[in-house]
Length: 109
Image 1 (tube, one colour):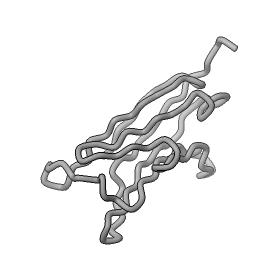
Image 2: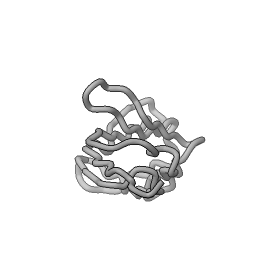
Image 3: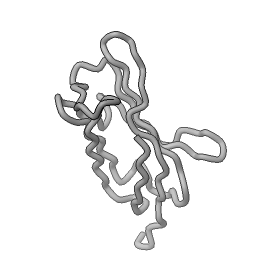
Image 4: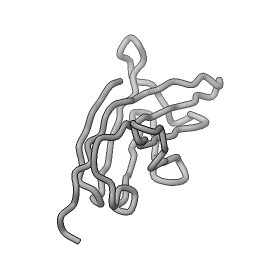
């Protein structure tokens, strides 16, 4: 569940996440009613980037794919938090992924 990653500000980034239950079995999240990914300022809890199935998230039987566009992180640099939250068809909410993201400054304008 805890996964950290790095990226450069203004770059494209694709995160592919295999969601597993407590026993390690792959969960089919294609029928989830809600899937949300966010990048959050860890000092004031401000949501800086938010993705859902309409805007940047694809889910099938084996994985969730989150697509970050260059505009999503342009101008950001520093340490942030990220989180992927899924709501299943029974209304159960669980955090599938959470961790730190280091966004490095982009030097080319």
